[in-house]
Image (cartoon, rainbow, N blue to C red; front, top):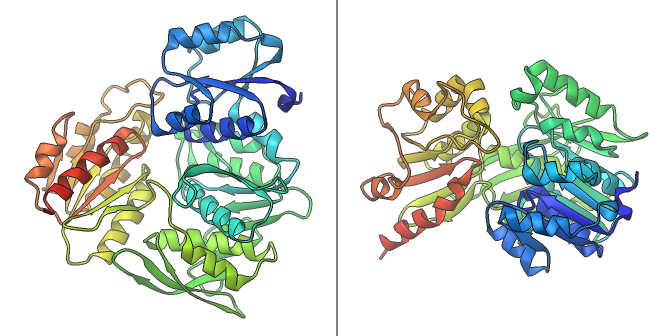
Length: 450
């Protein structure tokens, strides 16, 4: 079925980062778009500003749905929406066309030259940097990104339809819908074990994804993986590698090299080794699009980052860093970078665990990563789509963190605890609503700057 031939599209969970980009794309293509999301955010406000109808009231959304014709309306949802959602149940009963976001996204991108960025971490950063590079070359492309790019204040760039950049999401095996010309695999760390049960099943699904590569397609992969194609990393045995990595207080400096070429020095505004490698991945792909390496490096230098990806919110009198990190390996990358960037400054992490299942699966790994910070503030677990799991909570995680400077912070206690804290650096981490607390922390820091 061609899902793009319909007139009306209703999104359940339209405020999600991936859903909102797709909603905007269809809106720009003259479709009638509306949707429901239980929380009003900056993302949903921007959708409304575009003329997209967004309701945050379930009863109002049910009224809106009943006005739509089931024959020419497509209902789009994500796996994060439970099967007992009232809108979804009603649409099922009334025989609406109902599809997951991945299905219609694949229909958009598979007929073009599709570049799919995959991996359990780094997808958004690589996709954003690559999008910025292509934009600097004024290529005809569209990119769907899982974060808000600071240069464009958007998670979507529409500059033509010859090339599509898309994040290949492994959650719920969504990426198996894609048929890419280029696949980038940044890493395959254990995650989403509520879906995959074990790490090997996750690896096997990535292998199936690689099997979707179009004829004459190209693979780019982290040097620690074994899928064939081009490798990027820190070793000079890789096809593209980083050399002379230097950690600055607010950026990272490095050189990009291959066996035969030194492509020059990059002073990159996204700090940390992991972000340098993300830039290298984007560079590797761009070179194979026959773009000028010198201009690619220049584009990387000008990239201004992504919201909640090692975002430095304040620099004085305290440094405030905000990041989306919600997996133990992501947290390790953050703490390692912070210690190398600021070896003589004390730090405090405020972490909000995301999902009961992920906390259960990686309880020990979270503890080992978090205890490397000087101080640890733990917020309650953000449940997202899940119901609580007995015995799994932040108190249990706190018990096994081997750090004397640790505590649980309950709702409403954060600011009063920060008022008496003397740490030089504050780091907020998590994929839940911890981002909503950043502005109040920033305000507290700047008040003390006077």
